Image (tube, rainbow, N blue to C red; front, top):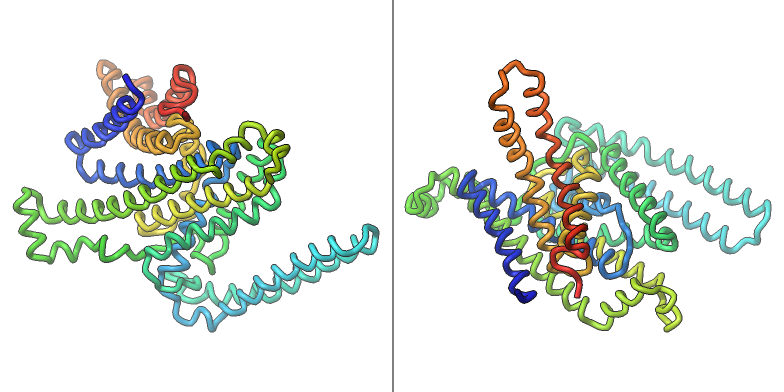
Amino acid sequence: MTEPVKNTLLFAVVGGLILLTGFTQSWNAAILILNMGLISAIMALGVNLQWGFAGLFNVGVMGFVALGGLAVVLVSTPTTPGAWSAGGFGIVLALLLGAATVVATVLVAQKMPKGRVRTLSIIAILIVGFFIYRAVLDPNTAAVEAIEPAVAGNLGGLNLPVLLAWPAGGLLAAGAAWLIGKTALGLRSDYLAIATLGIAEIIIAILKNEDWLARGVKNVYGIPRPAPVVGYEVDLQNDPSFVARAEWLGLDTVTASTLAVKLGYSLLFLIVLLVLLWMAQKALNSPWGRMMRAIRDNEVAAEAMGKDVTRRHLQIFVLGSAICGIAGAMMTTLDGQLTPSAYQPLRFTFLVWVMVIVGGSGNNFGAVLGAFLIWFLWVQVEPIGLWLMSLITAGLPDGSALKAHLIESAAHMRLLTMGLILLIVLRFSPRGLIPEK
């Protein structure tokens, strides 16, 4: 069997599994798996760009995905009435003062000669700057968070179309990646992993605790949809032509409107994925892509040939993080809400890494295949495990402690299955289902 035929069959099998879900369960479930598979494929492309192209071990994916979600709130939600006059400008001033403190500290550290005077100067700048920063920030955040805290309590956004928030999410994640990369990319791979994971947790902690920014753990609801491609179910149900088409297809209006909305998201997500996949393939086959793989395989040899390894690492770290930020913005748009407590490393870091490893590190199509396959299994393994446990324990009495224990254990089938698939793939196809050429 030739490689193109094998790869086509692999994609066909995954597509068949999603179609089977539609026929055996519901089309709503199948399209939801498809949509999250498309978003996961974009995340996997970003991680594959960093790891597969450059060998950067970034386990802070969750943080960049969360920044993409934050961008949707800052760009697309309406501005909270009175928030800027109450304390918004003061918050911006406080952030500028904090940034000025950091810049002043760096300049003193660079310009002054080493010694006690420089150390005391740095300590003095940090202490004074911190107290000034808090003195300006605290009363202004309190004023903003006091504005209708049950429904608002934050600055709100610019009320722009949500499609503009997707590239904005990429830019926000890219900016954070640049700051992180300037400090962390000089570390060895294991220390880089620890640093990125820690920074991702810091980002999530900020989102959870700074209510003025995105309502913290109270969440942001009612994020607008990307009109006109994706509308609202109520509008479709009141459209006579749509009702007539639904009746012609043999569907009730409510189900048809839900499917139409989800398919609208599918179309948008597919367009974004295809554009990013095309760009990633162009990059992979370009002289730049060959240079990045040369750096990945042997940094010493690449440096000997005059390549700036640190600069190139920073470049691809920023690009991969930007793609993860775009995916995070898309996911928040699909959910219609920003929920900081939902950003868990298990789902947004470990799972994406499993997608890349199973699909094929260094191969963009492999990353996409792994994303669809692993997400399908992540969703379906638990109900399949529950059915399997119910079948196994069918002969046991209803009050049996063993039966209850086995049925309750079905929830852990996800983790067991992910580990089992990872072990099987690494044993029989260590370079992934679609390995790098």
